[in-house]
Amino acid sequence: MPETDPQPTAAVVAEMLTKRYGSLTAIENLSFSVAPGEIVGFLGPNGAGKSTTMRILAGTMAGTSGRASIWGESVALNPAAAKRHMAYMPENNPLPEDLRVEEYLTLRARLKDVAAEKINERVAKVMDDCDLTRRAKGRLIGQLSKGFKQRVGIADALLAEPKVVILDEPTIGLDPHQILGIRDLIRSLRGKMAVLISSHILYEVEQVCDKVVIINRGKLVAQGRTEDLRRELFPQAIFNLITQATAAELKVLVSIHEPAATVDAIDAIDAHWHRLKVTLPAHSPLRETLATLMISAGMSLREIAEEHYGLEDIFLAATRRATTEGGRI
Amino acid sequence: MRHFRTLLAHELRSAFFSWNTWAAAGLFLTLMGTLHWFAVLECSRTPQAWTPIEATFRLFWLPLLCVLPLLTMRSFADERRQGTLSALLTTPASPAAIVWAKFLSAWITWALFWIGFTLFPLLVNLRLGTSGDVALFDTSALIGGLCFILVSGLLHVSIGILCSCVTRSATLAALLTFITLLALTAVGGAMESLPIESWAWLGWLREPAAHLRTFGHLQDFAAGILDSRPLILYLTGTLLSIGLAVLAVEGQE
Image: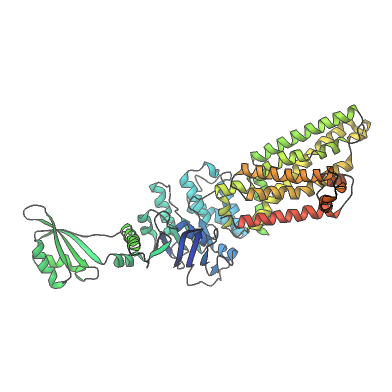
């Protein structure tokens, strides 16, 4: 791929993508994009249509309607050009078991148009990056553990330095050490290539992704930066605190600064200390000053913590909202 | 073209290191060696109107039905079953390059089997030397028969590749190839055996039947007759099968 390729505004574009198998609709009018150098998590429950979407983007499956493009090249109209910019690792990561790791990667490098004089260098580089050189270089792929096979799949994806990498469940079946290694590897790609990654491990996606796209039953239910989605789906900030003040006393204090605030008593720890819950609007300035305000008002405070909404909560809230509203964002 | 060369080299290498190829080669050489041995024995006992080489080549349908499906059955069926074909299709290599590479690799292997078979008549000739009966070794029949195998092999191998493209089961692919090749050979043989000319109601079949006489083609080749019609038949049949195989690979999902 020439280095002078102009950089498009979006590395991956899915526009009104629909895939039907007879009467079954796998995905419907799905639209999203991935910017160059961005790492995007692609989330959804089982059967939501993640793998179908990824396969359409990778050009191994034709969509029923809509448009998919990779680095400005239409996947349907100009598949060879689109594939030159893209690498795809499918969910089960199929590999030929009778080839040795180095042979396989060399073959893939040739098929991916890596310049002949650079093939050995690239193969050595990705084997190093994926920690394959020492323990798997000369071994038959069929003899490798699941973790090393995943590494071979990722090494293959990075081989030709594509502009776009699509990884379908790259850490499935890996042990925690291996997951950490793969996570670091994916993180290191930020800014260098656009990565679309699907995973059931939401914590992992939260750790590495700049943005998430959530689909449910083939439809887009949410997309954006995790923090934006958090604010959108959880418009309230909740604080759990242990204090000597009662719920009524605290309510009087916070209402002066935030009339929409609510204070609920959870339980009494002993005769003096109470466990309370304060709910504030997400944008309330009191969110930053609640502890200071209480202390300056002479209220003893033993513990204060804001409830954190992780990607799991965002995912559940987004899919629940789509199910109850039947709509999408 | 670059992808085609890469894929062909990979396919040939895979075929060389595959136990399947060596098992097929063992079966083929055992079968053909035994047949040739019996033909030589028969000719050495009583003079025959045919040479051992002619007799062995006339039994080409035996390895065609028993060995060729073993060579082609795994080419696509196994890759589809394992999912490696999908992975291959994510590279810039085109489906046509993939199909042609697998086809040519299988055809070269098939050709090498038959070239290996020529060792038997050559050994017979070497053993008998000039003192032997010349009827036991017929160079023109050997070269002609080999040419027929190589040309008709294009169609036969392409049919095997096509059958392997349409299923994920190598066994089913072998069975489909066997049935298709049996039908093709049997129809050709039947056309030669039946007195079509004398059946007025089958008059319309005369012309197409003349093209499908497989054993007649073998005889023509062995006699050194170069007729363009069988060449066109085998080449167009090959292109049709390969074209269908490319469509099957493109639409594999």
